[in-house]
Image (cartoon, rainbow, N blue to C red; front, side, top):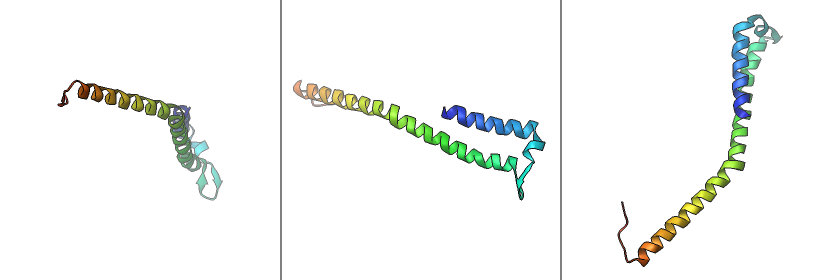
Length: 93
């Protein structure tokens, strides 16, 4: 969703700038035009996309990574115990 939001927002801004310059040059108030306002909205769009990405990583990816790291540590601990039990003191490169 974050990718669609950011790419869609950016692409629509570029297409409007290229093919509808009269629309983008309409003044909203003072010297602020629609094109400038939409350009500033791009910062908001990128912020929302970043927030969606971070939320997705925290909720879905980070727990999986933590579980895999715990499993890896456990396997390394078991391998080290097996080496010590076998009387082998040197580790492989």
